[in-house]
Amino acid sequence: MLRSLAARLASGELDPVAHVQEVLERLAADPFNAVVALDADRALAEAARPRPGPLSGVPVGVKDLIDVAGLPTRCGSAVLADAPPAAADAPVVAKLRAAGAIVVAKLHTHEFAYGPTGDVAATGPARNPHDPTRITGGSSSGSAAAVAAGYLPLALGTDTGASVRTPAALCGVVGLKPRFGALPTDGVFPLSESCDHVGLLTPDVDSAAFAWEVFSGERPVPLGRLRVGVPVDEYWWAYDPVLEDAAAIAVAQLRDDGAQVVRLRTPMIEELAATYTTIVGSEAYATHRRWLAAHPDDYQPATRARLAPFADLKATSYIAAQRARRRLVAELARACADVDVLVLPTTQLRATPIGAEVVDGHVVGTSLLALTLPFNLAGWPAVSVPGPVSDGGLPAGVQVVGVRVDEHAVLQVAARITAR
Image (tube, rainbow, N blue to C red; front, side, top):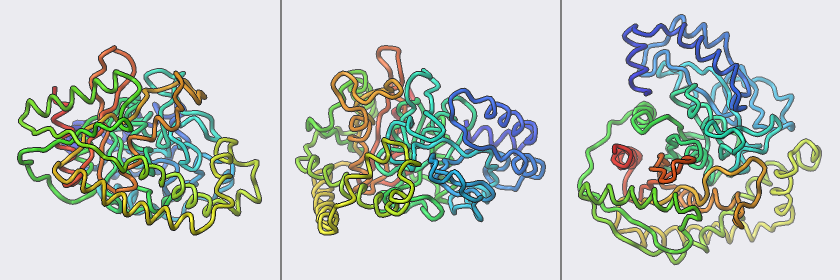
């Protein structure tokens, strides 16, 4: 969709002003609470004189955790209700503008990105376009909803443990988390600086591949024979059989295409995952401690409750968790040394009702984080793509993780999965 839209705008088949106006009107009428601010005047002015580039005239959205010049960054929180407009674009936004894209909107985020559901924010919950009574996933909730609703062909999000891939999975779109540091996080409000990634949400894999070509400045290299890893430890199992089916079908398709499938064990995974809470919680509390002390009631109760346990955490505990992380990521890499990618479900549950904390005996927050957070700790590239839904119901995400390959290769594998 993104590639063809850019071509139609470049050829003159589609008028940029008329197209941007139509997009703005749809965003203004959004029933899913995906949008927190429009930049209509600037967007229309830029559409009238679009900057040349591969995304010339293409409307895009930005998660409200990322600075956009002239608009406040409120991070879904009353804490920043009076935030002044950002003085400059974050570098990732500047990169989009340099490619000719037009930023039309800031998009909903779970408060301060500290949650995987998308239903905790000062502006209320984002709603899943597939069923507005259910969550989008988070924390890049508005980015996923805006793409899933067909408003935008590309939106920026962030991902500290799940926050691009989980909403992509629950909303039935594509969410790419690049390698750690591949996209700069300057101008992005931090949750956990050692785990934060900027990522992309798009309607389909080809759109993500095109967007990544723009960001990376590189063209993909054809893949050779692929070795696909399937982790079999109980930790990696999804609770919803439709999610297990979707991942199994994806693996079978890759095998039919000539890939070698390797079943592997990751005995360190539970210990590695346990370091995540300490690392992210400690880094988040360090950012919020002064505001939390001065304005506790401006935080959503759920966010305040997540931050509170780290008030008394000792620095030695944080340092120990980071040391354990390095050791355990090295063990995970050795366990996966014979494969190029991993293929597994993105989440353990599909979209749950807004406000639900436990579904069928499973904690929702944990079930939306468990299968994605190890790859933030490792810093490996990963993408969630829509998988086949055997019951005809809510979307099911399949995750492709790059072990020995880059984003282009991960996207090529994702394209094979979604081609049928």
